[in-house]
Image 1 (cartoon, rainbow, N blue to C red):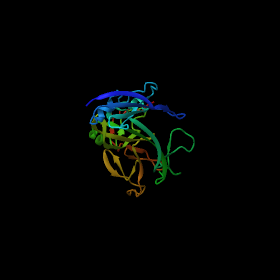
Image 2 (tube, rainbow, N blue to C red):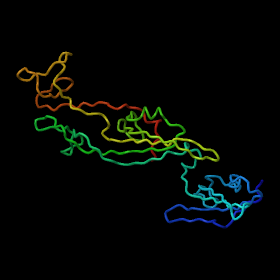
Image 3 (cartoon, rainbow, N blue to C red):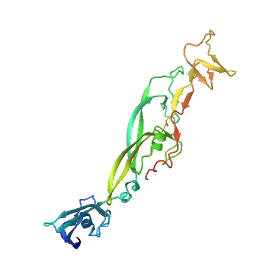
Image 4 (cartoon, rainbow, N blue to C red):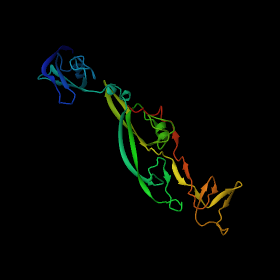
Amino acid sequence: MSIVACVETADGRGGSQDFGQNVKCKRTFVVTIDDPSTSVSDISKEPGINWLDAHPEFGAVYCTNINAQQDGDPLHYKVEFTYDLVREEEREPMPWDRADKFTFSGSATSGPAIVHYNDGFTAPKLIVNSAGDPLEGAEKEYAQWHIQISGNRENFPYDMAMGYANAVNSDSWSGFAPGTLKVQSINGQREVEQVDDAEVAYWQISVDIAYRAEGWKLKLWDIGYNQIVNGERRKILDAMREPVSEPVALSGGSAKSPGQPPDMLTFKVYNEVAFNGAFTELPE
């Protein structure tokens, strides 16, 4: 049970290319055996061409398909090798050794309108009425940019999925300032791929990161019915020495003078974690 001969033929040999596209090539071999029970795996390996081997004439394309079929009788097999473009970062046989991929997309969402740029000034001003009271209930659209990182991992990163979902970057990552990125989701799907003659299981991971230039802190007006006096919390009184019926603008825990706009309070409502070392840097 052995292979008698292996000859490359002109049948099917050649290449094709559309304008603006990569060349696609094919090589064909006839393998002669002396026993019909010879392993098809051995027959397909006889020409000595392996996955991702470069084409001998067109070095930019690589072997992506191997097809071995009987050619007319049980003792002759036609073995065809198809060559196509494979990017450098994808020429790794093990799935988790291949480079991550990136997708960028934009979307719009709505949220509270707190500041304005009416007069062409660069620093935003709070939205208040002519008496200095904050105007609430107004909304505006926010542009939101999404970064999707997808790649293969040998194991599902459970710790990262639990620790990073809904978290904001505490450090500068890929040129983005701290506090401007938030992990919206981390998803995984188990896949199986054949590498050589073995099945290899791995995880396809995708991470969705949203960017907001203004950051992800919660902003609220500093208003209320109480203030701090000599370290004690006391009700704010009106001119009639009665507790106020509407919230009053505050600053540092003390009531502001009538007509003064309130200060803005900011709160970190999302956990902050370092993105460097956890996510692949974006390509330039």
